[in-house]
Every structure is written in C-alpha cells, then in structure tokens.
Length: 316
Image (cartoon, rainbow, N blue to C red; front, side, top):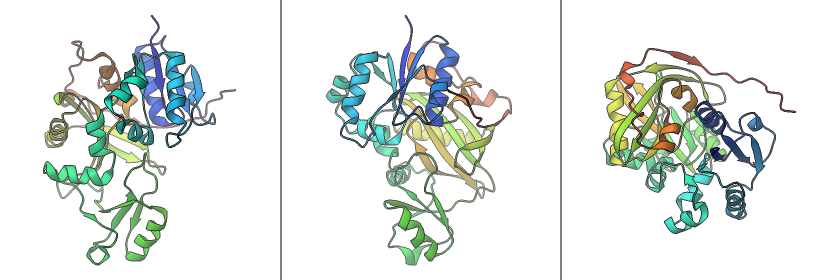
C-alpha cells in the first residue's frame, strides 16, 4: 500500500526538508503539502499542494479536517508554530476526533507548553538548572546590561530579532516586537550550536550537534558535525526531564567555556535532512517507533561539513 503523508507549510524550508527525508526512505510515497498560497517551490517536494486557511483563522480546523477526510493520510506533520500552538490547546478527545486513523507526528502537548513560548522556555531551563541567557522585562531598563537581544516570545525561525546596544535601540525594537523577550546577548566567538534531539518517552535519547553559521535570513548556511560530551549531557538532561517523545531542536552558544541554551524549538529542525545523511533520521524514527534500526552514536561520526544553498526550480 502506498504511504500517504500530509505536511503543513510546504512552502517553507522545514517542510521541504521533511519531505526530502520521506522521499529518501519512501520513493513511491504520496506526499501532500498544504500552504496558504502557491508562490513557492512546494510542488517540487510534494505530489500535490493544497491551499488551506491560516492557522489563526476560524476556518483552519474545518479546512484541515476536510483534507484529512479526503486524502486519508497515514501521517500528518504540523510544521509551523501557529498550528502547533493551536493543536496543543485541543483536548485529547478533540485531537482524536480530528485525526482519527491519521498519526499526528509531533513532540506532544507537554513539550509545546514548555518550549513554544520563549519566556516559558527560560523558566523551564531554570527549573532543571540549565544555564541560559539572563532575561529582562521591558520595564527593567535601569537593570539592562548591553548588548541585549529583543525577539518575539513565539515565532518561527529567526524573524524580528534585534541586537541592541543602548536603550534607544531597545525602544525602537519594541515598536516592531509587541510581545517581546529581552535577553542578554551571548557572543558566538566560541560557536553557535544546533542540536537535534530525539527520544521515546524520555528514554533511548539520541542527539546530533552541528556548529553552524547563519545566513542573513536567519537559516543555517554552513554547519559541521560537532561532538562534546558536555553538550550531549545538557541536551539529554532537557529530554529526560520533559519525558520527550519525539523530536526537538536545542540551540546554544558557548562563551567563556560554558554552554548557554538560548532557544528550544519543539519540532523538527530545518537541518533535519542534513542529519538524516549521517544516520540521525528522526523523521523515520517518528514513523516507525522502535524497530531495531534506531541505534545512533554521535561520538562515532566523522567530522563532516555541510554548506546549505538554495537554487531556483522551474515549476511551470
């Protein structure tokens, strides 16, 4: 039987990388992607692209339900923060009624509640004694120590993030960021790291880390495989404490020899296709569960380097 997959936000890099992982493993799979418009390269990665209402629209859930009933996919991947936030607020009965026989591929409510909101993430990290940047409230300006980072509490990718060196710059940033998190800026002289983390109910934790450079748009443009047992221990502590059941992405910077977690994305990462090439195939693991083919040891990886690029694709 042909495997059917439904992926949201197929116009974005994350969904396109997830689709690539699926296609590598299941060449004959039928992949359906949804998005709010067609002006993107999603049709290069999916067999069919469907228009759907925005996740913040009251028409979104009825629209999603109609597509689930029509296509009857085995798996559904929600791949944007707005949609994940909406689904996380639904009860178990509501989710069961919506998805029925379709398996929802996500890290679950508990993880989303902890990490979808950046302020909640910092509180959670404090509770498990993981180092993170110092945070400030907007009216704490007398306590500010510059430089500071101003960013939205919840967002997708590296959008609307401002590095501020004085109070005037903070005030200007707050004009654009209505619901902000204000954090101490951790310089990346010793590196910025993105770590894929997968676990099953807090057990059998697997991690893979990259030291990376960002493009001007905020995505990863260059990365190299990186292993440090201290970094691994930090990420395993997070996964174990939250009883992780699925995949998340932890972002850190290292300064003065210490790691600081500055963000946790409660979903797959856009580097998901790169790491699948190393044997860290969390998309596949999420589908199959424990089948004896899930062993992974990052300490044995070769020191490989990847450059990430985008190119035009003629679709019509």
